[in-house]
Length: 255
Image (tube, rainbow, N blue to C red; front, side, top):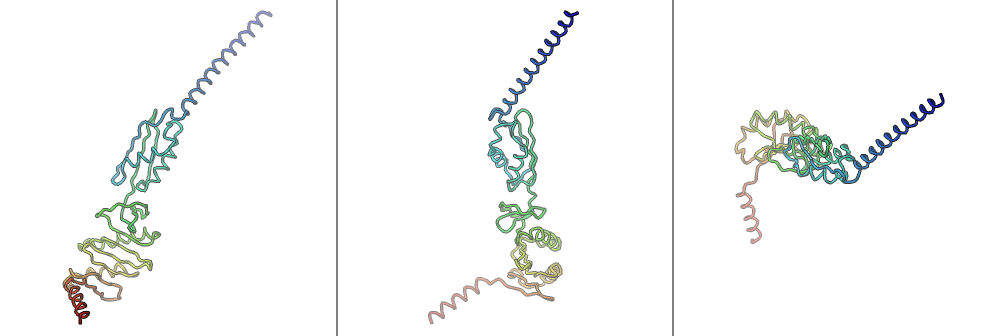
């Protein structure tokens, strides 16, 4: 009986020892794997895949932005949120998503800013009326200007006024909201319209009705529509008038 008990005890101790040995080996192997995975520059990001349609944002700009992160040297410790934050700092990036793909690939999907117009000579505004600080001269884009906090309002006003003008063959090149919240438009061809702060659409309709009947329209510099009825016309000063004035001034001096 005693020998049976002894054998049972020895078998238990042997089994426990074997289990502990296997567990220790697994833990050791896991520790080595973690150390290998987290070792600096052990497994760098070797492939950067950029997806999305981009008109203004260059892929090289995206690549340089990602490579500027020190963490990109280690695929396993690289946090996708950190990469996303870095990409969102680029002016032309509206939205971005980042995903890691085993063993060393970083996938980036970028939605470019849906640009709507130029803003204040040094920035752009997107289709949501949000300003982003970059510059790209595109003759197809309207130029908007005004207080920054009014960017959405200026964009909305441009859309409404352009809808009114377009059927009559006019195109807006510039919309300006003055510090006093007065509206000014410049049409393709250079004619400037002063619309004031109130009844803007009614005053613009007055321009549409009256302008075709103005003689020598090519000499019109601006139209002031800030009246209850009617308008005032400002004429371009032709070169002959300028030259006559200069000659007259010189003659008077000689006299």
